[in-house]
Length: 356
Ligand code: GDP
Ligand code: ZN
View 1 (cartoon, rainbow, N blue to C red):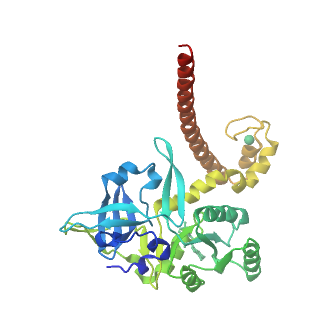
View 2: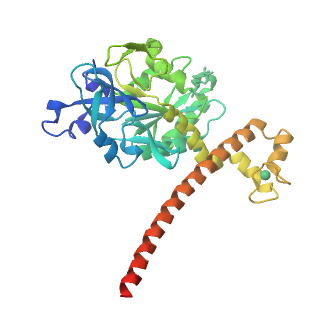
View 3: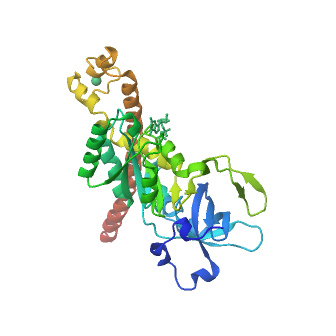
């Protein structure tokens, strides 16, 4: 059983409930989504829910359907059936990506995040511009960002201060942390303030380690999931929404983890400033640094002045970016073609009618 407040419920959601609605329905929070079957936490406990046909059919797009972190209203039938999900409450914040499916579509990867921990490593790759990109994502989403400067144990005090000052200059709070030593963990808890948090940041900066530090001894939580039919089953996947010891909710979806990659793809040029500057010496303006003659970037990779792996990740991200762009273009072109067709039908009708 959960109390609503411990799931992150607040005034923002309470005011969306119409009088009488709670006589037949309960508020619940989406903890996991799997092909339109939803695991929900509510004062009625933990259970599985499915959409009403009406909700499915009135949803204009995938983004109108529930996502992890969403608050919904459910009807819980008597007996041992799945709960029925009637309404998705308006979101306070959302993180989305463009899903490259049959058509490029907005996909919500986490909803109603209050505080976003943007994690950066103080060691090696401290890159304020990358942090700014993540901050942009946070502000676009509606969540309040806090920059976590991790791996302080590997860094001297002077450069820690410098990094702190840089972040302060961006007008954002920061926490100096070391997941391995446990520094800063209590400050992270203080920023949670009973709200909902999520983590964002490049691979390897220490997000998982910090999450484990926040979860403390609860991290090996293998609680049983009880389905409505009474059959228990063990969860094998990592949980996407967890209650933090000491209050607060953590959202950690695979989609949220991928944002790091998609964000990097969108920012290929800024994240790879070194390659960009080498590229000015390539023979061709539009050199892709693949097999073009006179490529300065590949030359640098060959003579060792540019890390081979760095060039490889540049190519990988570049390919993903182009792929996504192509998908979007195709979607846009299809839409335009439809609009032109509609327009031409109108024009033809006009001339036909006039000819009468
Ligand atoms: P993620 O990819 O952002 O989830 O990063 P991980 O949590 O998997 O950490 C990547 C690596 O950095 C692992 O080897 C961690 O042990 C290490 N790491 C994480 N936090 C710290 C830290 O504060 N100090 C040090 N020295 N290593 C850390
Ligand atoms: Zn080149």
